[in-house]
Amino acid sequence: MTTGPRIEDLLRELAPQVLGTLVRRHGQFDTCEDAVQEALLAASMQWAEAGIPVSPRAWLVTVASRRLVDAWRSESARHRREQTAAALELPGQGQASNRDDTLTLLFLCCHPSLSVPSQLALTLRVVGGLTTAEIASAFLVPEATMAQRISRAKQSIKSAGLRFDLPPEPERAERLRVVLHVLYLVFNEGYTTSSGPALHRADLTAEALRLARMLSQLMPDEGEVVGLLALMLLTDARRAARTTADGSLVPLAEQQRDLWNAAQVAEGIALVARTLGAVPIGPYQVQAAIAAVHDEAPRAEETDWPQILALYQVLERVSPGPVVTLNRAVAVAMVHGPRAGLALLGALDGDERMAHTHRLEGVRGHLLELAGDTAAARECYQRAARMTASAPEQRYLALRAAKLA
Picture 1 (cartoon, one colour):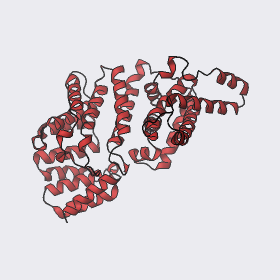
Picture 2 (cartoon, one colour):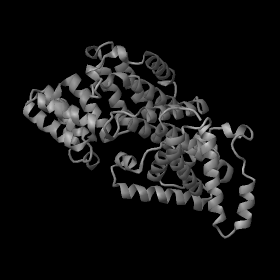
Picture 3 (cartoon, helix red, strand yellow):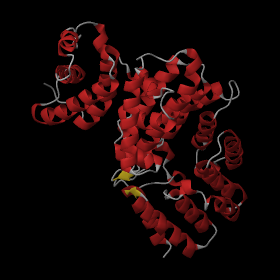
Picture 4 (cartoon, one colour):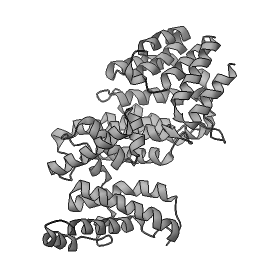
């Protein structure tokens, strides 16, 4: 046995790989997922005492396979299932044990027989490793509703008898759209966690980046795949500057830009330059271009806000939505003044999609502060602080309110 990274992080990384291996070999998505969850539980208890095995992935595959044998023995077709179980290929017997089936698993979870919300929820749970509560927060629905949605999605895969293969070409574009959305949500949950004591979770951002790179290698000519990878790189490049030593949030305008990851910035900008204008434009490419403009500015005061505003106007045509409008309002304020930005925010007050997020009140508070209305800004910051479950964001918003007292 050897020591290694934190067990929780390692299990999160290995879970989709192990599930992919079992589903590829045996099908029966729901049964395999149950077996993997039991293996993960066993690992969390045993590894804490005995240490992490030399080959933790093989350990998990072996234990999960045994759980499958136990499940099959309890069914009516005992003899046939036991014969199948006896023929299982165990880890270490050939190159198959080293194969990473995560990408194929990702596309399986995004099968068109599932509703789009179910595709997103199941993939975040199975591939992204998010808890049901985290996924519910991302979709702004109760946790019980999300648990039912995930359960129904697994049953749909079972009843449809779906194959564990990459989708055929005619289906790939639509499946890809959902896959990209899922990776975007996983990255965002890692970059700014919806709840808990930490602002970000590097395990989730790293997994989203890994899967985005896999997609980019598989589909190098897909502009939106490259655009999403660029967006992730350009955003994650700022991670080291986003918090102080005590974990307090540092807004973009106040970050030490020499702490940004220069290699990631350069890679992201190169990807944007390679695709923007060369392929049909999509929302991830535009968002990556906006991130590139931010990252290219040596100082916050030198940010090209007119260019950012123009890009947000393009984004709102390509992919309209309340979050895009929210961000465009900030760009409008930086170009035309805070009152102009506040006027645009007013259009979001009746949008129910913004009713459960603190971001509208947080941005309103920021623009009111810029406009000199400190009393109203303080009230907005206080409301926003009460609405978020993220401890760093709560502290930041409360501090902004206190400074205006």
